[in-house]
Amino acid sequence: MLTEKIAIVTGAGRGIGEGIARKLAQEGATVVCADVNETDANSVASSLGHGAIGLRLDVSDSNDCDALVKNVHERFGRLDILVNNAGINRDAMLHKMTDEQWQAVIAVDLSGVFFMSRAASRIMRSAGSGRIVNISSASWMGNIGQANYAAAKAGVVGLSRTAAKELARSQVTVNAICPGFIDTQMTRGIPDAIREQQVAKIPLGRMGQPGDVAAVVAFLASDEAGYVTGEVINVGGGYVL
Ligand SMILES: NC(=O)c1ccc[n+]([C@@H]2O[C@H](COP(=O)([O-])OP(=O)(O)OC[C@H]3O[C@@H](n4cnc5c(N)ncnc54)[C@H](O)[C@@H]3O)[C@@H](O)[C@H]2O)c1
Image (cartoon, rainbow, N blue to C red; front, side, top):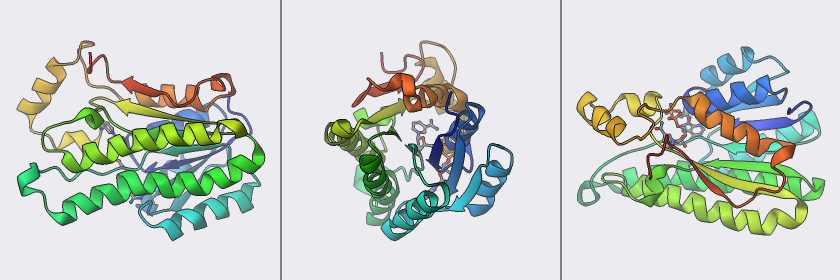
């Protein structure tokens, strides 16, 4: 159970982030739903109960990240769980990828995780406890058309493992989850033929649902997971086997 825990979930306005926010709230946490889309953040928060709130946040803006973490700390007096889930993709083959496509994905998917983790770690170090869960991707291992996204998600793995080492002495755990092929708006734009090809590669025979990822986040965020840190956990139906 996560009763009395205060959690921030970035990108909680829809998709996997919404699923994570819902699961943490079901477990009893008070969830701050932070999203660049404020309307979506508020609408998810209002459906959660347990004192959940929605706040606008652009994770690619370090001032925004510092201000949001300060706001949450002042409002609730603590911060127990940070889930860095916000992410975007701007796929293109390497030889066609624009500077803008590269920079946009690095800014949100990698710098965003750094800005939020840095701000949260200051509070968690002083408290001597905390949980950070970062949403990477199976694509970190390399995926055609995703040089920007794979680089950012591989960066998240390195950042998570380093933060895990640095924060261990403060009893703060940091882990990364690599979802495989999950049914959200991010994957709904993929043409049917390619979707079918991808699903055919999944040993468990189906796309994942946000709840499949959320269940693992809830475990890593719990007190019971206190001896698990620096791990990189695939949640992909065996996709990488
Ligand atoms: N869907 C998949 O198959 C899959 C697979 C592996 C990893 N992931 C990762 O899971 C995470 C969630 O993906 P999803 O499929 O739910 O995507 P999604 O596009 O459905 O949702 C992403 C959410 O992040 C928010 N967001 C975007 N930019 C933001 C910013 N700058 N600041 C704050 N919020 C921002 C969006 O408004 C949206 O609510 C991402 O990090 C993604 O890379 C997804």
